[in-house]
Amino acid sequence: LALRRNIGLHVDCCLGGFLVPFMEKAGFPLKPFDFRVPGVTSISCDPHKYGFAPKGSSVVMFSNKTLRHHMYCYLTDWTGGIYATPTMTGSRAGGPVAATWAAMCKFGVEGYVETTKKIVGACRKISKGVEEIEGLRVLGKPEVCVVAITTTKEKMSPYAVADCMGKSFGWEVASCQNPPCFHLALTLPTSKNADLFLENLKEAVTIVEQDPQAWTSTAGVYGMAASLPSSFLEDAAATYLDAMTEALTTPATES
Image 1 (cartoon, helix red, strand yellow):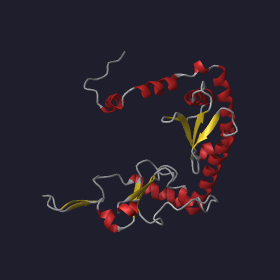
Image 2 (cartoon, rainbow, N blue to C red):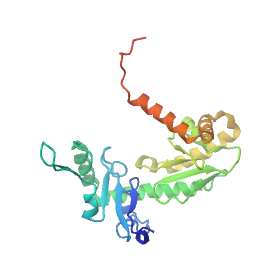
Image 3 (cartoon, rainbow, N blue to C red):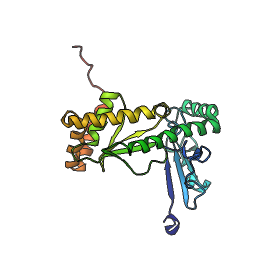
Image 4 (tube, rainbow, N blue to C red):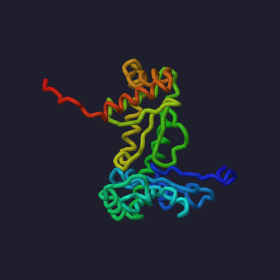
């Protein structure tokens, strides 16, 4: 489509940027996704995820210098002289850049291949195991590091299972919507506990089936959200962010 319409095609590789490039060497071949594919013009990647670098080290790559020049910010008539920066952001900390370089040197290609083997292997093991648990099914086809799970029984909400996994077993899974489900993003620590996750997940299904009404907190939130207009939800989200970012104008009083 991009080639036919002569438009750019961006590949969002932020989550899997330090997994999918190493999957072939790790024994999990994928179809080409990068600049080898005609028409791909840019790729984004987050080293702070599976590159094990600190936050603030996102990268965007372009297929040629001409496209990259559109990212640059120039001020040629500024009274302080000619100013040029790679992005609209001006001053930036060099710490995350240096730490990212150090992490990449520490792991190297062989290190990232090894972490890819563990994470992708665990992801596929969990995906297969979920299909063997009555009342659950996997959404989509997990090929890299995320497994999305929903329920097949009308009276059992996936949000209830997610709540039970957190409160009963300490698993942090993310609730999703459209369709209702929850997902687990595999990391190195969780990849070591794939068998335990499946064991706890099977137990959680049994617990929720025995008393569905005891696990309704997240289901209630998402159920209400589905009935509200998006404009209201956006206003509510803005109010929440305001509360997080606004400074107090008067000192807090001690109770």
